Length: 592
Image (cartoon, rainbow, N blue to C red; front, side, top):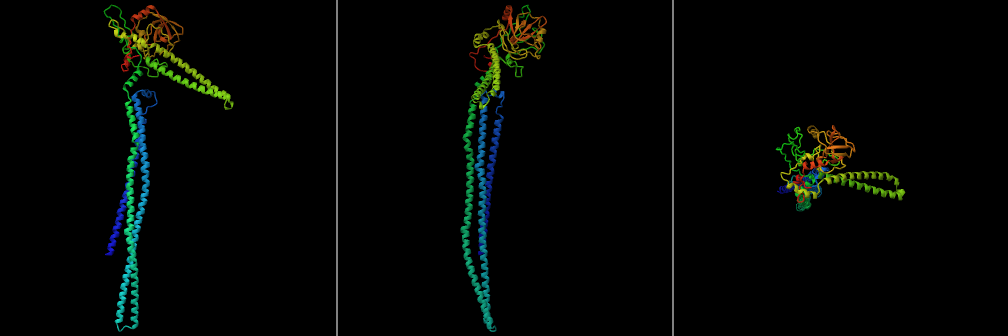
């Protein structure tokens, strides 16, 4: 019974150790699983931040003129601000990943090593205690069996002595020998009993200590270890949430910045910017001339009519120009001439002003360098040991030449700018003439269309008054072979009468078809004055005539030609901008 009870106790203890071993191993596996979970979350945050940064970088404006022009609009600036805030937002996700790694993953990895070592130590102590009590029990069983054997041997020896003593046939010596043998066996039994009793007392003490002290202590240590593990998991879960919570204020600021950027968008301001960017400065076209078919007279069609009929001028199909000027497409797709004469007046003025500002900045930089080198040369003069003053002179000379070149460029662009500003109608002139368009009726008709605002190469030019003498020093846009207007007019029209004379201010080679070469100072006859396209038609003799740039000649019209031009030339109406707001209609009405 005792052996069965002890076996049950040992089996129960061993089972409990097995259960605890499985449970604690499951706890370690859970810590490893949670560590892996946090590590994957950190990787997700890192990849998310990287993708957000790449997205922000992808849509950042490139350093080109188009993006710089777009930055003028409030919605473009708001989008750029949103991209910058999004980049900062991505940075906060990187902070989350870093904090998860440093505060959870690293700590749990280190704790796992300690936890495994502690668990191993506790179970080692438990197995050692179990082995010790089992060994003690085996020794106790050995002592018990020895005591039992000695007792049986003593009983047999006693019984043998008693039989020998009762037998009369046995000699006295044999009886004495049997008696001594019985005494020896009794003494051995007594010694075994004493040993068994002593070891039994010792075993009971060890067993009591094993079940009431050693094993409970080991179980308590395992319990403490498990509770610390569970507590550590709870702390890590709290840290997991706190890591996100710590960046929320900055994330909120990023989102507030995006909201503020969105609220800063001003549609009206952007509309004004569009108007300012594309306002041409052209005057609106006048009315279409009335053509009286009832009078028996030779009908002529104004060159500035909105449409060219077949009866008026037999031009091949496809060569007439009947578009209104706001819808004309500029044929110059390249950078255009240096003086920006291919642009509308308002845009040309802005370009010239921008070029002048850029040149002035370059001049200021060169002057700053010159001042610095001058001071350096003065220092060298006062302290020759620091350097040779003559070594600075070549650079100073080079800077001086650069400044002269830049100043010459500024003067050239200022001249072009002054010409543009002179040609553009002033505000007072605009007010004075604003009522003309409204008061004209059917009896007072005029025409002015896109063909008068387009030079032979298809680019925009400024409108000029027929009574103004043209004096300018800018390079014209030479006609190209792709525009056959000159050939058409030479082929279709009769010989034109002379309406004045002109003097060539500059030499013109006239390589393009429809033009004529002139020498500086040469006198020519004017047969058709500038209609606003920047070209004047002249004649040298009966066989030589063609177009020359209006800015290259000084025209002297005859008095009757002037009167004729006044009476039959185009009348231009201008709409005032005194009460005009910025809207897209200005792209067609164009307040100037």
